[in-house]
Image: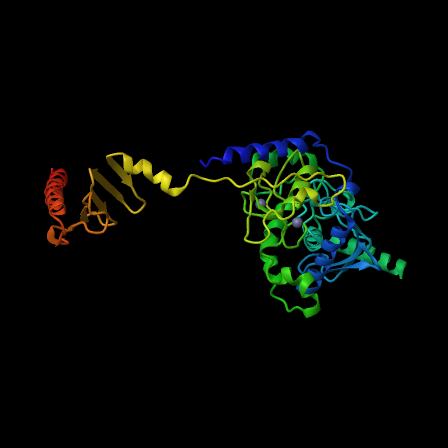
Length: 184
Length: 261
Ligand SMILES: [Zn+2]
Ligand SMILES: [Zn+2]
């Protein structure tokens, strides 16, 4: 043991105690300056553009870096193969400490997606981690399409139909076409 | 409810398990996919070109020293026990926001503020106190300081002070005996039938350099002995050397007896 070590430890522990007294999470806007948030989003955009993952893409909507439009293509060997879905991603000002709000913009017939496009996915709620990014979000939604969790459905009709893949595909494709015809 | 999360690192994880009971547990599957996928990130060509080098440079070069939260070169870097690198302010904010269940953002291992290891590079160490940085509303404490294990030399002294030691090494058992200033060490290697004795006598007065060295090697019953006496320079040393040799021979005899019977 060196002589000054206990001193260091004491200093350290006292500095830890101080913030721990007010350990309640503080209001979001106070925590992170928007400049560092937009820097992180810029950096994510850059890596998304350079890595070129097949089947996913995302880009800021207009000038607002806090609002993105994402696209997911259905994976091969799933009923969603060949279909393309648009999503919106809204980033809070304390991103990445809080997850973005992600919704399907294209109507998506899926056990874990409701009629408004809300997605039930743990990593977008309580299992969020600031190490996740747009890319990992889109990749996991892409894999969710082919592997739904039918035990806690938002769309119980889709969940019940999932067992019959042929029928599911027919209903899902019809809805997809109808929605596309409706919007275009 | 299907539990997809197969990899569990700590019990804190299971505590928080119930809260997300309504949703798809994508978490761990994504983690695994990420490992494979992240290698592709840097494989592709970089159409951004040189102008972006300063902004994206860190991620293009592998980003080994990028913070896992802000994705930039870590400022006031700290490393968790699970080995993940963060800026101290970034990690501190994350832990503050998840004070109920403090875990590593990357691998979900539990993280204790006190056990975070600061990294002191050669550059501007403690140049800027993190607390002085303008983060309105949040007082980020100073990085936890490093812990210093006992220096190696101090630890060794315990060994030198005791007269007789048995040490078991990873390659095989090794016995070391110390009589005064004479060391007897017998090492048994990977082959039990092959063992050798090494005997060194160090005279007190002559320092470490001038002592006579005697090496007796026996291999599988065929004994070959090598004796390398270094001519001593003074009568004192000669006496020392003679005494050493006598003690050595005695020691060898004892060891051989112990081995044979
Ligand atoms: Zn950081
Ligand atoms: Zn970790």
